Length: 269
Ligand SMILES: C[S@@+](CC[C@H](N)C(=O)[O-])C[C@H]1O[C@@H](n2cnc3c(N)ncnc32)[C@H](O)[C@@H]1O
Image 1 (cartoon, rainbow, N blue to C red):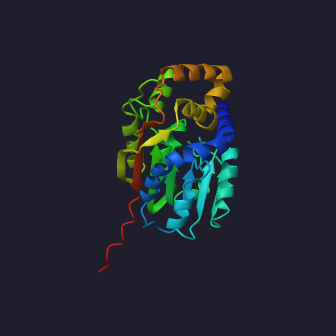
Image 2 (cartoon, helix red, strand yellow; image 1 turned 90 degrees about the vertical axis):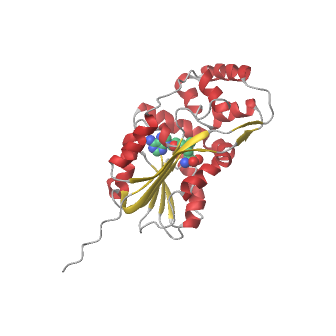
Image 3 (tube, rainbow, N blue to C red; image 1 turned 135 degrees about the horizontal axis):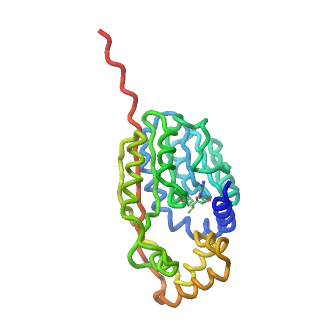
């Protein structure tokens, strides 16, 4: 594991308990949408869930595909410990520590489904990850990926967090390249669209605290130090509205695709 991946794994392990409590309920509509995008007519085979975190995908997958093997993969041992605890209620499910960018060769061409929610944007090469995930699928297998694009809102707490971190507006072509990677790898796109749901935070301070201790900004603290993160927090709170609660409607993106079934043999005459 390189330094960047090790830092990310540590950050998510530190964040795991609070992430489950704060973000999992708020992200639930996107998880449900991504599970539904897999459809119900999957071929035989396991379902892989790269970047499973605490595995909030599992209850819906377990109910939709009774008895089917479901495997969550995550870089962070702390996240996987929580995912494994959740998997105890589903004997056919398991969670393992692993890199979603390098899923073992034993899965290639065997999986009925690959489902990933809010992990893709953290990977060093998202297009390459999508290419490899398509390669895991068998004929008729389906891919469903929800991710946060570079710009998720024009106004709101995520936009303000990006502004104080001086994160640029991002690359307009990035989304196109992700869809292209899936198509080039041999899958037919079934969804390529923005998906917004309302979200609510008690106030700006609670949101910042959750992002810093229980969410993606934990990695900033590890990379740049607690004081640098605290300074960003002061700038965020100085600019944040005093509305209580703070409501917004961030925009994620859904990519879904299917591997064409093998053509049936032409009738012999
Ligand atoms: C925002 S959480 C999302 C978790 C879950 N899918 C959900 O919807 O709540 C992102 C997860 O991606 C994991 N992650 C980041 N890079 C990864 C990688 N290269 N391989 C596997 N997991 C990774 C993190 O450890 C973290 O648990």
